[in-house]
Length: 284
Image 1 (cartoon, rainbow, N blue to C red):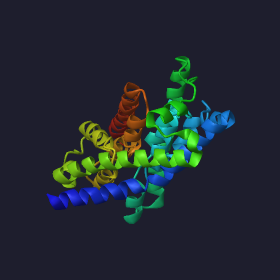
Image 2 (tube, rainbow, N blue to C red):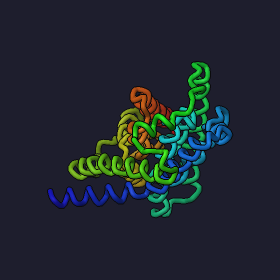
Image 3 (tube, rainbow, N blue to C red):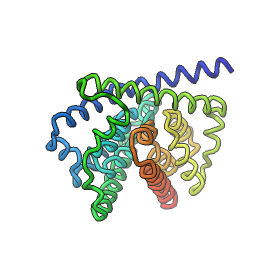
Image 4 (cartoon, rainbow, N blue to C red):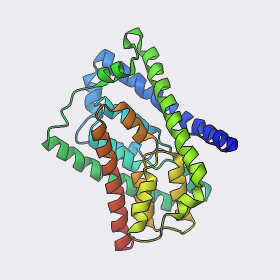
């Protein structure tokens, strides 16, 4: 049991430390915008037409730092909901490093990344269109409200405030990741992987649930199972599209509207699962 706790803790630190540079840069930029009231920069980030396209592209960057960054930007209403979901859908966490380590052809890897990015862009643009009709894309910046919630004392300087935010969220991620890693250690990755059936309907539904686990183990299990031939391309897509790494737990932590956060996560799961099922039934 002691070994399991130690192993889970070490993995939690290793998984979380990768996110720190992304968190720090994010909060530094957010503090700068709040202090300078840089509406021009916010306009670029929150452009209702191009935001999801950019989100689909940046989400392709390996690891889940971009999804954590996007969650913070969305909580401050610096980007739209469509851009956030585009980043989430495009993010693949550990998929790319694992495939490269298995010497998978670049063409096949590129197909997966591009397909995910296209789905992310289309979904993001449609979501922003719906939000525009509901006039929810006109929400003002909420950076100041977030700072008050975190008690960061922004008046003491941009750098100090950014460090304060980064430490707070890092500790939160480590704690949540520790309990997730502990659960995975107890269940076993093999058992977790064994629940994914190579079935055109059950497979994507199950893979989508595993993909929602805010931990790199989810993408590791899904990618490994696909490479070992235990799941179809559609099932792989369901798991990878639904998976946003730690982005979802950061969103739940920093976004004031918890029901909205849960709705976004639910939408992420539905898009991923439905896409996977459709791909399976058309034989892609």
